[in-house]
Amino acid sequence: IRRQFWVKLLETAKEKTKLHAHTLPSDSHSIGQDLIKPGFRYNYVAKEQQSHVELVIDRGNGKEEESKQIFKTLHQYKEIIEKRFGGQLEWETADGQRGCRIKKTIDGGYSDEKKWPQIHANLIDNMINLDKAIKVHITKLSI
Image (cartoon, rainbow, N blue to C red):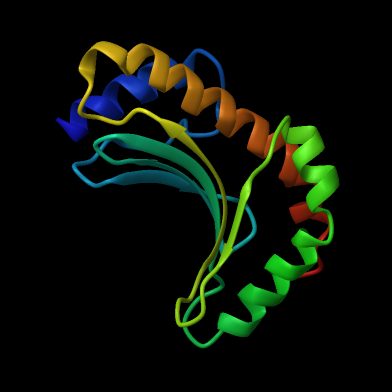
């Protein structure tokens, strides 16, 4: 059922954005697209009852501190980023994990097929807003 959820989301997304033009559907809980700079990835994540969009910062094995430093740098612009996004975001840097996340969670997941169009629209709009809010800060990073 997740694969169908992703197929429909990607079909809808093509009408609004090119952010995931090369993303393929899968059976996984997430699908995504790497950004131009290494170590940055936009993901859609769907669980049964909720979903989210996220930017994952993961510079790779042995570079956990670098990922955290990039996250801290972006966090300095939290107010500006969230204002441009149009609401609050969740800023997660978990000890013991390689990557950091900036995400927006929404109600609704892959288990409620009748609500898929609404969930997809919400996810896509949030992804577009996340990209608009944060991409300029990523391009300014000297990495």
